[in-house]
Length: 205
Image (cartoon, rainbow, N blue to C red; front, side, top):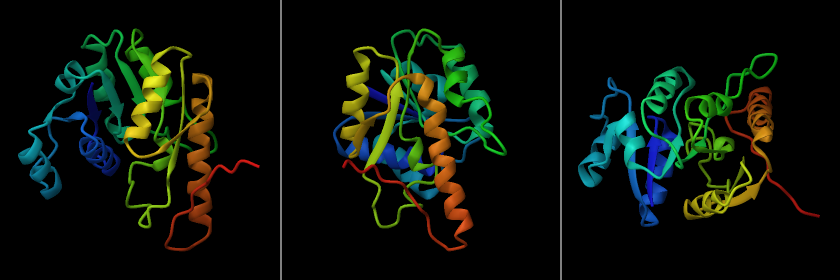
């Protein structure tokens, strides 16, 4: 199993490190103008030699995790269209923009760019700035949704390898609900006027 993580976010680095520590092969896909001389990325590349263009990371990987800022997603759509993604598992870890309502889900755009891949949503509740928004390490779970196929179990196992409790949120149509969930906790954090973040935790009664 080889994981490709597309994006230059804090979440991309964090998930990559967690999976590498779990013994998984990881390759990072970054945009052409990205500065890999930034100290953390430079060290990671020196140790693992795993930083390459988006398309190369997609080609090499069985799983593709998309952890990029929304402004760079069009470049990733092009990379997905230009490569053979049949039978690959693509996990959307992003959140579409939100003003008065959610825009088109990023997950829907991924499905259009890679129609032959198995598409899932996961890790988006963490946010692209994770773990900076979780300095005390309190987030222990992530929610995932996607197609009802055997690959679903592989996604669950990957989430657990990364160190999170995997909570099944059902079909891909629920991807927008997971994005709304993220935006709600962001609004709560903003409205509290405090220099801290708020997160939800699922409780079974």
